[in-house]
Length: 151
Image (cartoon, rainbow, N blue to C red; front, side, top):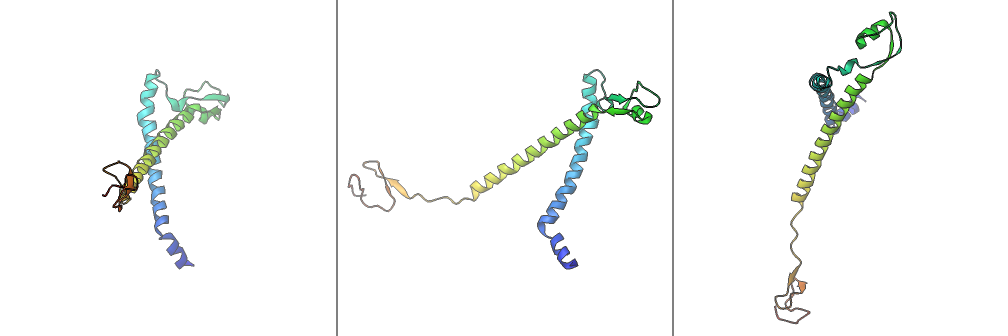
């Protein structure tokens, strides 16, 4: 059983999938950092200092009661909150990730179609044009069937 598992685990597809999952996780962390550390702060400044991670609606007051300046304060007080700012961050991260995957898949499809076009053998012509009547005739013809000219 251990031998069968080793054969399964070392197949090319399983190893490729494992590498893809690891790289995907690292890419996800990179996109999250891009959104949270590079995109959202300038966007917050453009929107007059809004910090998206601290946008929330208090559904139920905690102890002590609000107002709460930051989401962390509301969580510490035990308030029930609707965290729409975190959702906006996650949505932007998803859109960036989806766009990056779209670009990757589009590039792979283009490369695949280019390789299929170049891999297709050039087909030799099967017909030719009669120099007298300009009709299409078989390549091996010695007389045109339309004008009966000797070729």
